[in-house]
Length: 634
Image 1 (tube, helix red, strand yellow):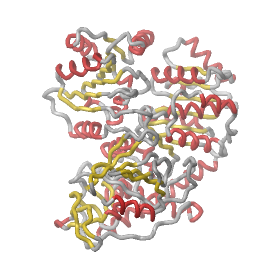
Image 2 (cartoon, one colour):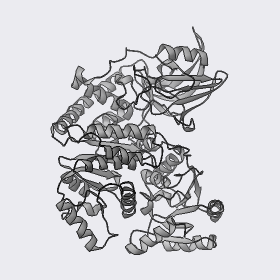
Image 3 (cartoon, helix red, strand yellow):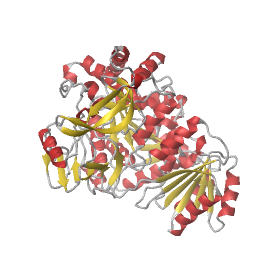
Image 4 (tube, helix red, strand yellow):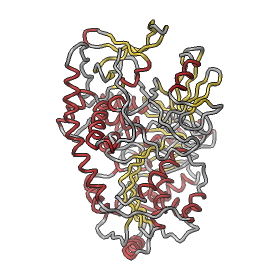
């Protein structure tokens, strides 16, 4: 890539050259480094060149310039005119029909199945230099049935996306020069049209429900937010504004807040809760574990201690008398914000004036709990927090059927967790633990079952006799569990041996090594959440997944472990969710017929087709941006 030619091409697309990139639509060239901030992106992208050879493509922190996510290919869509130096809170990605991918980064590798919008499913073979009238240029090489090859120029990369399907086996390659792909796409489009009509009917029903329009921010709101001890990321600022704007509307909010582990979702939820409380409305925050409930309660109380806010907690950590006091306070309006586990869903819990429900990690709640939640959520605003959304939620967000805010800017100086998958052996455990203890840190040791955790305790004790150990699991008496957790948080224990009870909520910045036994017993999202317990500080964190020695793993387990090892960069939660969707299959997400539509064209293209049908049915008033002109591949 000629950097100066790239600068000229970007300038023609509306990009402005500046000394240092800070806002969307800007670009900067310094030697062999090209920085640009594409419209609709949450962070700038850095392209490092060696002459005219691209060495790397990485997202970088907008303030520090530190790289945090690597990519294979970058798609740049046409720019949207913006007023510079303003917050992008109202910016929505332009709708560009089928040609607009769900993810602007095409992270494909040689041998992967890909989907070309016009020509169908092929196999990606890599990049090749091709002589064109404009000179030597790099093209993507796609192989189709019968060995036919298609060369895709760089300006048409947006027409290619990685194939995601649910069949558990690779799809057949399309045959060039036939009508089969066009018929498959039209069949999928017809199916998408019926789903689009149903989604819009549900959306209209939700929008027609009259909710409470919360008042604009008060001075107390600004004071409370100013007490945040850290620098907000761009993603946090944008997500907060999106949530507030929807709360101030007359409809019922049902928003998904998706952000990586440790990216600051709790702070956004806290600000939303305070805003609701300022308008004399109660708030319920539902958590999957008692540990997370207690941690959220401590955070909310500390941040709101200067204001007349009553924060209560409901969990089995409390005595029956303490629980009853909170329940009575909710009924008479004496408790403003309640934070609790499944106990919040009990039939004796009644609210005087509930205005906002916050659900932390919805994938941890079962069908019965969600039915009770539907009753709790009637005519109130709902904010769901997750790092790895469940398939149905992810799908609804991708096609625009559910409002979503995405926090994908990492905190200052955050480093990705170094991840290894190894066969279980004492030497690896000893090396990892002693390396962490040597620098004054602490270690999580995870075992999936309560039965056998004492055996792990004895094993670790014999391998590292100098370490101070604590054990925690969900069937311990509440006082014993609390004692173990507090000992670890207060650095009175070097290692915490526990079940996945620590998966959500526990925040120990000094613990930056994790060892997981029997990782094949966990789901992909669970593995990702567990790993998120470390690396929440500026130190380099390590995570070891130790598989049983000599025991063959199932193909599904191998795929999960490969995925969690591969997606170890910062901001990989959304990629993990997509991978989890592919590994687990569509299930009853859309029904058998739509399952077939997705498999025929791939999940990405199906979502594009569905998004297109939604926009078509909404009509011209539903579009904020015009369609781009038609382009075809070579």
